[in-house]
Image (tube, rainbow, N blue to C red):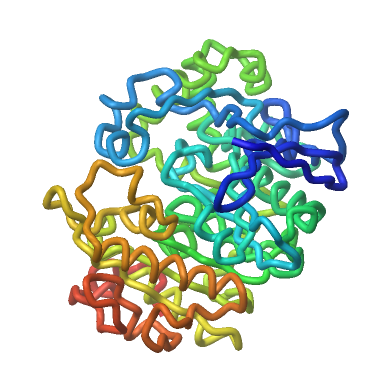
Length: 443
């Protein structure tokens, strides 16, 4: 493949010039030591080589057999691929139209429960977006114990934990400063996340530290999860968990964790997760005192930007995510002047009986059906074209309506249903979320 060079405020970068678009892989956007906040990259020497993927953050599959530990998603997204891992992983991938100028920008934050995932996976591609005039960016950030250690003794200037969220913020700042060199419009940056990535977008769009860095938000399979259900804890509430990690690692103080090799830290953290069983809230973001605060993340405060929310029909426990998505959309309608659009991905994927499982819509959104083992048909490619076009339209103007989809009205009552016959339709599952989850602050 031929190469291409772009001159950015940081310096010259070399990428790949494909038939469909330009691609730049693993551009470093920040540097950070363990349990330290990221420092933005503002320059480099010589020509930066962005023709190959670099490391993603350490996670379970760096130390264990992914095909055994996470067999389903390994087969769906990672089978046959190889990855490198490290803590020096703060990089992003960019796909841009060949002749781009002032194009809308779509920045993607991957999911994985804040403990796994990568921007380098085969199903994540911005090629189709670039073909349709959108500059697409996908970021890597720190995960698990490397990105979300929240021991109070590690606080810096009153700020504690959420290193991975601050990485995401740094990536948005880098995009703001540099994306024009790739043909993107820094004033039109939409941030899209799936699952934990959607939870990240919810946090970032609500934070005063991200003000001016984004103009729209896409939350897929994660809207409201942290805002209404898995409420953040304080570092002091998380102290016991991280002290257990220290104990497992044989460390006397939290600061001693900085000197551990990555594998020892991972297994000390994993043992603490198993011992506490209901440990998910402790591995998720906490109230850090700056980026994520109780005030900025109030249940009733939804920033006034356009939103697009998506959920799949067999998404984990549908009664939870469908209910949270509807609640989030109604909250946005009540407090915002900007519209909030909702879609329900209901295509039952061919090849087995799992239906529209959590993350199934990503293959369609990224137009990467060819990366899957499944026997996709023409209808799947049609659904993919429709969903991708809607996302491009939303990135361009905050409205997913385009020639590829029927008229799409904002609101939660009749979401756009992506299936064999894409159309607005009522929700297919009937449930009373308020009654089932009483006490979660339903309004």
